[in-house]
Image 1 (spheres, rainbow, N blue to C red):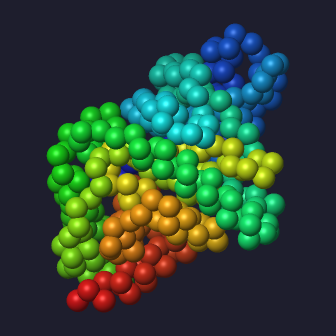
Image 2 (cartoon, helix red, strand yellow):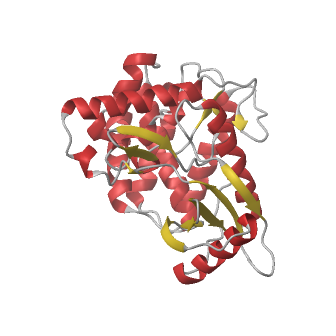
Image 3 (cartoon, rainbow, N blue to C red):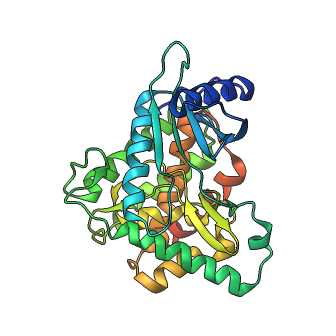
Length: 313
């Protein structure tokens, strides 16, 4: 995973809809009936495209490398997961007519668990069933293993710390040169690095496939059940616990997802310390990439890391 600013996608919703429509028309050979903006971030835009006989999602991305990585990972995760993940329908490099890389995929039924009121306001039993379905499906992904750690397209590390520690150190080095980060954040990172060897004293799990971004926004929910997962990010063969810190992002704690996973499949002794470290450093990496900090997300991560690091000193 590279450190540093990433090129952001500079396309507004109207122009993006025109590009998504043109790409779908070319791939399907039919005229789209409706194109709707679904959402996006700094590096991509997603559009729902309806046509006679069905619908799909077209995602526009900043470059072809990102498209190739995402489509590779969606296909790989789809083959491993017990729940549906979007199937790739077409891939398209940028050219004169559609000057951004893009791909089309099936649309997973339902809405994001982040915005599902029936789930958010549901009974304790409904939330527990949701947690059980999510963690069971994630564990099926984790049973898909490899011989080495690293990116799904080229895993090459014999040891998890041989991959992760240099990554964490490079994030810390970058933060000290980047003016978007406060002294509070930098100090929290230093305290975390000071106890790194204690936090990661246990041997990591065997290299297993991870989704990489399974927070509640990327879990689809329909008719009282989990209907699928979407939007992996930086999928790799990793320590399986690296896939759990996202469970606490946004509203994830409402469903006790980490607890559900650990109760069924076990965890390392220092899992809470590891999740705090993973969560903080991932958020800082994301901030470096986009060029800004999101305080409501960052502050609790800094606080949690400080609280736990103080117990190890």
